[in-house]
Image 1 (cartoon, rainbow, N blue to C red):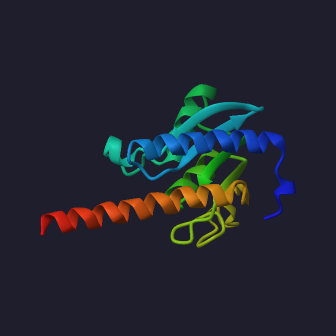
Image 2: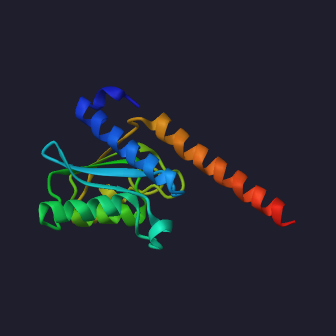
Length: 166
């Protein structure tokens, strides 16, 4: 990925998303973090909390967008950019379209459920009433490594638990 397409602001906001992903990981959640930015300021933040909240919709993007809507006092997030450490899933991509987010910048593609270009391109589907600009690859290696290490550790823990139960 050509890193020249990202500016210093993009780097700063993605670094904050990475910090939030680390918070998710610290509580045993899949390490994904997201921030919503409007006019150069963070108006919403979130990190995965599906397990913690017993809520399958508590993805980083969902929580960040909910907070941004409250902050801006509007359900439409026109001219907002979402920075997220992993490509949005179909649920979150649909939310980006419905909330009218202008742009999503994600670090790592999701080759299983990615819906901003990898598996599907829901955010840019011309049949929908809104399309979201999208760019990827900013801190991709760092975020991919964080996710890979998390799942490697989780598989190891599950294997150890199975061994202990034998």
